[in-house]
Amino acid sequence: MHANHAINIEALLSHVPLFNGLEEDEIARVACGTREINAARGDILFHKGDNSNGFHLIVYGQVKLAFTSAQGGEKVVDILGQGQSFGEAVMFMEKPYMVYAQALSDSLLLHISKSAILGELERDPKLGRKMIAGLSMRLHHLITDVESYSLRSGRQRIIGYLLRDNMENDEKSLTITLPTNKGVIASRLNLTQEHFSRILHELSEKGLIAVDGRKISIPDVEKLRVYDL
Image 1: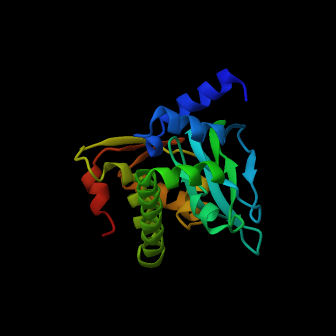
Image 2 (image 1 turned 90 degrees about the horizontal axis):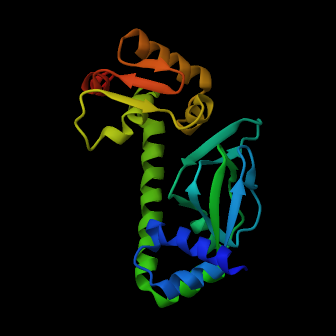
């Protein structure tokens, strides 16, 4: 590995929340087991059934995790962006990937080898706690998803998705930009694209949202929040 390349990877790792608090020598050791992956939009990072020997961190860009059903349809499990990681659980379980990963936009990722991370986990319990916290948060989201699919209508799922970043704020109005195309988001919410579009159209007709491509304006957040409760 060239020195300037190693420094680049160390600089990238030092800005990742997971590795906050690691000393320079610890970052350097992780960097030795880390490689950069430049992925163009549409590139497959790994297929379902591939063996895992590490996990991925997204420096910038966007990645979807999905699988193909027996009928040939796609089910999007997650849409991940900058600063997020994936593949840790499979790495620890020593199982093949249960999904495939595809770049939704031009992306830069870091692949951190299992051997590098296991070494640091033995040296630094704080890193282990951070990884457990991240995996626990993902499990919580998964349970929330299952609850949403089972107990909430498609309309409620979409409203929840549109307002997901506004739960802590009390802004009266809001404009959001969908992170990717509507078909991918619909699959993530366990809806068909037609159903997703039909609900967006309905919310537009009611004056609750205004859709302009991927940009969605919400003139009255509270009015949308209580609709269909």
